[in-house]
View (cartoon, rainbow, N blue to C red):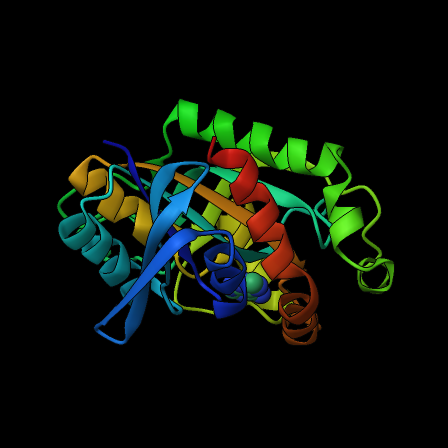
Length: 250
Ligand code: ADE
């Protein structure tokens, strides 16, 4: 039986998804509330992971061991690294790097100790399904009918695009140009940064669980990132997550 774990790094996002559940049942363990139910007849468990790699890894492990999930979907926001990414655009992660992992000289920079890899790769099927779901949510103009025009205008969101790309995760909120430029010089393929994806990817890799990680750009990972991030979360993020999830779970 398919059981899909759905994790979000913001309560605003997971609340929007919990609202979609049929027959929701909530249980609280380890300071997190797991809500089980169905979406389109498929069993899902939705949880707000909280922020950072440890919080995310703990939550996904709990979903695997206590709720027996067979696949995982993570939705959240991210700061743009790629110049061409604008607020409101969507990234489906294909590779995940922990940008704050550095055990040199014992091993190469970014190498995950004892796994012998520097990045994790989401399964091809998951990437494609995420890409199709995000594009179809956009194509149906649902973002525009369900989110007030004024909220979209605040971030100049007109025609959001969906890209597939490399996501870097770490316990750091990017809020200045210098740090952003340094990351880009060391990891030129990274398109956006966030604080959970590569931790979720590591746990899913270790337990052989399929995972799809979807990130909406909330800020540009430099000087105004904290202001844009807060405003985006408050007005738009929750609706985005729910619209894409409805397209993904069919
Ligand atoms: N998630 C959203 N915006 C971010 C940023 N600027 N840095 C890290 N994680 C983020």
